[in-house]
Amino acid sequence: MKIIISGLILLISQVALAGEVKTLTQELLNLYKLQQSEKSLPISGLYVYDSEKQHYLSKQQAEVWIQQIAQHSLSEKQLKMMKNLSKAIEKTDISKEQIKAVSSNIMFDKPYLVIYHNVGQEMLAMLGESAIPFAEAEKKFLSVLQQAESVNVYKFQ
Image (cartoon, rainbow, N blue to C red):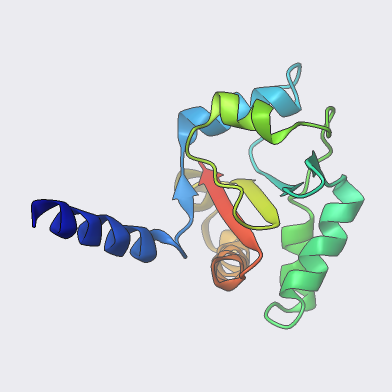
């Protein structure tokens, strides 16, 4: 009986987490090292990984992907803000095995992974009212990604 109850609790917790953006700071830092070992961590960045082809999309490909997934939910200005977050990656061909070696929590059950290093509340607070449009765009964009059936989102700040 305890096993059944434990199994049900585990199942319910997995269902509850399915749409959430996952924050895995240390693992994402390790993943970042796989992508760009020589550069310092940017203030913000958005990376799209194709789980099926096992490579990161280029900056241009990521911008097209962002446009396709969010064009009906975000204004042109908001789309531009989010597309500007996509960054070039030095090493795009990184296998699932390499990612699994640095992160046990990243799931490959959907065609795409989005790794998002967001600006952070402290930086937004320093920018004051000029940050409001960005904060709104970011919130809408993350909501779109959470609802998408084809993507898992991982972020750190």
